[in-house]
Image 1: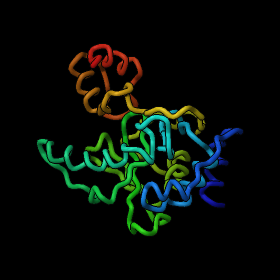
Image 2 (image 1 turned 90 degrees about the horizontal axis):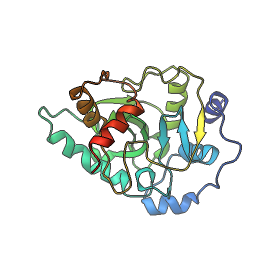
Image 3 (image 1 turned 90 degrees about the vertical axis):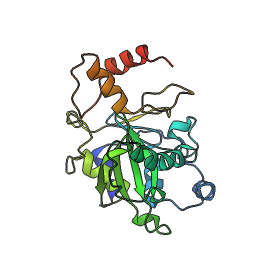
Image 4 (image 1 turned 30 degrees about the vertical axis):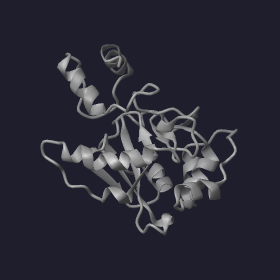
Length: 226
C-alpha cells in the first residue's frame, strides 16, 4: 500500500477536486523539482484542511499566505535566522535556513517545512515542523504524505500540535485557500507566541501548547486592530 493509498483510506479526499496545476511550469517557476508524493497529494485533495488544522501550501494560490509559488516560503526562510538571533537565548537550528522550504501551516501558526537535502532529489526530502519559527523543532524522517498518515493515524505525536487533534475521526475539509494563521489581508503574520503572551497577561487561562480558541483570537484582534 502506498502512503497516498493509506492516507485516502484514513482520510477520504473530496469527490470533486480543482484541476491539478501544470507541475512542470510550477517547478520551472520555483527553480526546483518537487516531491512526487506532494504533487500526487495536491492532485488528489486540492485545497483544504486536514482535521481542520493542517493546511498545505498550493501552487498559484489566490492568497500569498498559502501560495507555494509566492513570496511566503522565501520570506519564512529569511525570517528563521532573524527570529533566532533576536531571542534572548538563541537556540540551535536543526538545519541551515537555506535547506528549509515552507510548504504548510497549522491553525496555531506551526510551519511545515521540507528539508531539501539532497537538493536535486526531492523524493528524499523529509519534514520539519516548528512553532512560529522558534524552538522547538520537530523532525520527521519521511515524506510529507507519510508524515500525514503517521500523524492522522496517531502513530506520530507532534509536541506542538493540540492533544485533541484526533478526538474526532480524521477528515479533510475542502476550502478556498486562506491562511490558517490569524491574519487579515495586508497585515503581516502574527505568531501564536504573541497571542499567548497577550492572553496570559489579560487573564485568560491558556495552556502553553495546543489550539488557541477562536474567542481568544477574536479578542486579541479587537484589542490589536492594526
